[in-house]
Amino acid sequence: MRVLLNCTTLVKGGALQAAVSFIETAMRKADDIQWHYMISASVCDELREAGRLPEGPQVSVIEESPARSSRSRQAIRTLARELQPDLVFTFFGPAYVEFKVPHLCGVADGWVTHGDRWAWRTVHSPIDAARLCGAIFYKAVMFRKADAWVTESETAKEGLVRRLRVSESRIVVVPNNCASHYLRVEATAKIPSPQVPLRVLCLSAYYRHKNLEIIPAVAKELQGILPNRYVEFTITLPEDSLGLKRILSKAAALGVEDRIVNMGPVPVSRGPEVYRTSHILFLPSVLETFSANYPEAMAMGMPIVTTDLAFAREVCREAASYFEPMNARDAARAIADVCKDEVFWKSLVNHGKGILQALPTQEEKYELYTNCIHKLRGGNFGRSR
Image (cartoon, rainbow, N blue to C red; front, top):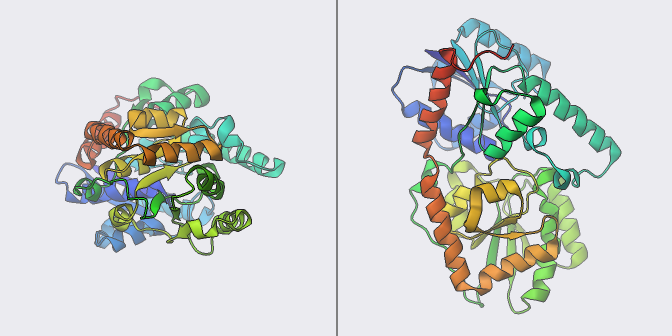
């Protein structure tokens, strides 16, 4: 069976990492699927960085996202017509293109499926709100053009059914996990002594819903809660990022610029070494489907501090210290609770290790995805049109 794997919309963040891991797994498999990889420039760069870029005619690189480029959309249509695949699997959509063969589409856009009042509080102007509403509506229309869907969480599945009126029978949940090289690492973070800086990792690309601008205020609050403790936040944004400039400007205004260190974007292959230099994962996001940060931290034996919202609870359960969204003081309290209590620290780490054991490995995820492909090819999902 010929399958066109469409990863052309992936530019940064956890979706990019998940796609790279899937491609690396697919390349190792000897099954009945003949893959053609249609990938973005960012996916290409990550695979090249890891030394895993497929060679030859089985790979096509689409330089610009089809979300913004009519030329890219036309290139995708032409490629699909020339290859004549039996099925198209858009790893995370929407694809922004209609296909004449069965189309399985991954959905990991929380704005479309379950964006709530907390997420909308990150939108600060009527113009931005109008643009975002338009984008959400357009994506929803494009998502509905697929024939079956895969989500990474029950939260997203429920949102697809409720908001897009998609039949529940045509949606499969395949939970995310970290990349395989995290699972090969034996690591457990320990509470550092008071003389050692407590390093809090915020490994994330910049999106408004990630709420990274809260970090300076959290750093300031920690100075009052832990006056004898030096707490340093590590972020991973491009040096020319507008988001980085906003964060550093707020840090300077609060007098905590020395508490924030930016190491720049981190390739997927270097993720574990970044975790090894840190002690706590901090994810202040107010909207996720299934962040790979959670299983990454669990694999590295690191406690998690994150927002008390359904998407986080669904994944982390007892493996995280939670705080009220957008509440810098409560976030600082949650971090302090972890680093002041060794029993609590170890409990979070141990619960994380247990949760990780229940998540599908990359090999198991591959089987779950290919089962969906075979079901759709065999007509078991039905058609959406």
